[in-house]
Image 1 (cartoon, rainbow, N blue to C red):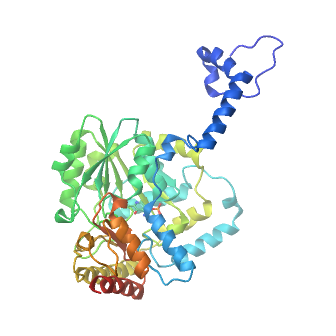
Image 2 (tube, helix red, strand yellow):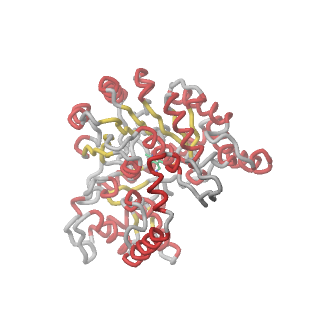
Image 3 (cartoon, helix red, strand yellow):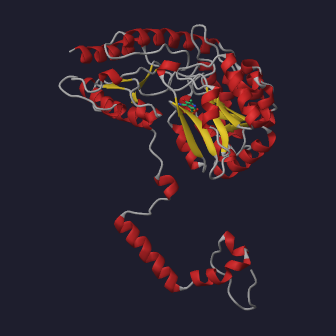
Length: 446
Ligand code: PMP
């Protein structure tokens, strides 16, 4: 911008002011008539309660899983004996050696300062080593970005990949955050419905039918939240090969990698289909594996160009994840898997109990959970029935009715794009689990 000799510089400037064609417009903006109009418009908007937040954010639905959890916690705080199947978090405390690493980190002043935005170098190295150990996938530490939980990694992955109009295939039932993260990033979620009849798994044929010339990404998750489905190595390979052949990116969420049951085993897509590495982002974190939901450490792994963009984004959005939490995560991922094995065994036992008890309730059918820590029963048989003198027309209403009448909280299928189902977490103590399902059974048979 050129400025006449002797004129005073503007009090502020917008980035777009550097582009000359906008000069006259900006001068108009600085007139008091413009300011009057703007103030008036803001006042009116406030009065009418419109236009106060951006359209982008106004369109986001609140996290249904967190909403159910906070409703249950509020009732608990009010003295009610609520059994909460809503939260997706282990009931175990974080293992002691991880907590001790964090305590030591608090006392070390180097952790009181800013560190590299993309994560502590030691932690990135440890995550690369852990990924090789657990998934057989070889990556460089520079391909790792440490994020504020897996949720932040999901958001960053779509922010990096999506332009307006790009389509992201998102099989349903889906974890409630995915469509919002895709939409916020400017992408369009394209939902493929699956059901309990097919084990909630998507096939290559379904993917191909959903593909258009705007398809940019496939969102893939196994073990799955909410359905508990685990794809077999052959299924993962077939989907990975389809993505390579069609030039479709894959965001693969591996956060439940260690939580599989019976004969079911986790398999990592970029390990089974190495050709996908250049068009694949892996999302993971410590939350579920190490009972560390509150520490907020996750990560994403991807090809160099994508990781460069993601690092740039994070350098402006959040800077580094809290160093104390990163040091705790370092102790977690570089330590052994004994604690994980103990928790996994407890989840497997509880999952089996919940599955059996749910299956015995008339009107409820439930496929066996293969991984993660959720049962996802079909409860459509309970709709329209008399339940303690009330009826529910949808699973959304059923969740409210059940919470009200028997103080049992679960997340309705609507939250996952799958009405007619319900998600019940079995990451809670055995006694509570049995008590909660017994209350449900009693309500249905009363
Ligand atoms: N992915 C999936 C499938 C999840 O279920 C969750 C947590 N519910 C996350 C990612 C994010 O976990 P966090 O942000 O707690 O690390």
